[in-house]
Amino acid sequence: GQQLNQSPQSMFIQEGEDVSMNCTSSSIFNTWLWYKQDPGEGPVLLIALYKAGELTSNGRLTAQFGITRKDSFLNISASIPSDVGIYFCAGRLEGAQKLVFGQGTRLTINP
Amino acid sequence: DAMVIQNPRYQVTQFGKPVTLSCSQTLNHNVMYWYQQKSSQAPKLLFHYYDKDFNNEADTPDNFQSRRPNTSFCFLDIRSPGLGDAAMYLCATSRERKSYTQYFGPGTRLTVL
Image 1: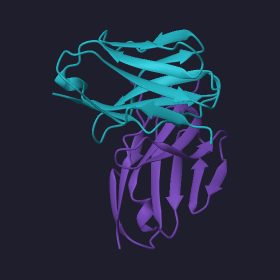
Image 2: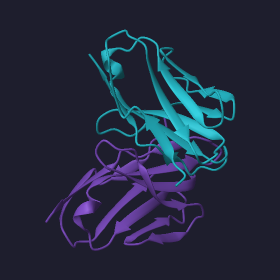
Image 3: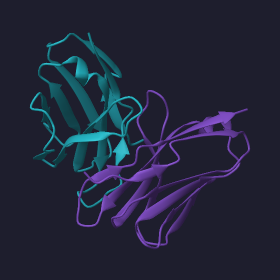
């Protein structure tokens, strides 16, 4: 089935560094969602994007809906230890109802 | 606070012994979803209810069933769990079918012995 290419698969950074991850596809998406999942917990919605070009912030997090509607990125500024976890992008293809998930980016932070 | 609740958080069952996982929501959302998530993988949609309308994914095994007795509750029944069914099971909700923002519960970790 249709998949999103999420990269990088994992990141190892120092506390205080900025983080950038993205999701790309060859298909057009109408919605992009970014989730964070801690071990043993369900995904928590971080940011939802509904329009091409939309740029939305949530505290230190910023996400953008790509102009081509085929990609989205998530930035985290000044990372802190509680940012550790797995970040998933999810999108809805044009004409479809269910979400397609990326494979996740595992973020590890060295204090 | 409005939320999605899953019980139990951890469930242990024996090979072949039926098990039921439950999900409740106080968001008054019309759509409820069940996902299966295996270690280090993305969630995989099993089925969803739009109100009382059940929608099964084509590749969901017959071993998995679901019930939604009312707006607030949804159950996942695994009739004869196999070792391969050990996973995290996630319930999610969205306001309407065309409201694609989904809110997840904390999940139930199923272990099959």
